[in-house]
Length: 154
Image 1: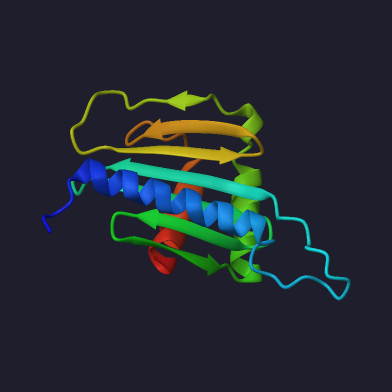
Image 2 (image 1 turned 60 degrees about the horizontal axis):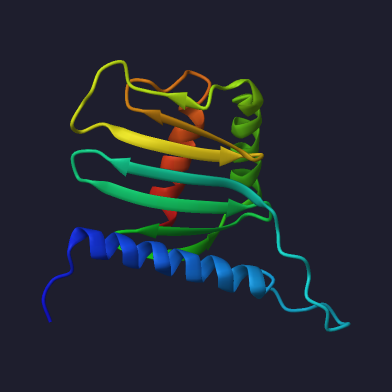
């Protein structure tokens, strides 16, 4: 069987991520039902992170839920992970400090670049997009932490 094209790999990764999200949400995020047999409610989404571009052509997607569980999809594969209480607390603090309600929806790079990264971060129902060179100072620590977590758990 031949190699998959980049588009086919991306479509496969997105479909796989959608399936993982659906499985997590319908399974009560992999927890066993309490003694009464009722499923616990699915946790809320804390943050959704997308990173694409760069010289290596990244196409990463990560969702972290309020209970610290996370899922990711990259060209290399996908998976599920659990943040420690400290990691979850640090991430939440950085997200709150970024003051998402005050951020503009888009921060473009000041000039075009072929190997720039594009980022999309959704927190508390608001999505902010930015690119290399255009990242606002309030968002830089958030992107740094999300990049770290993606590298750590993927």
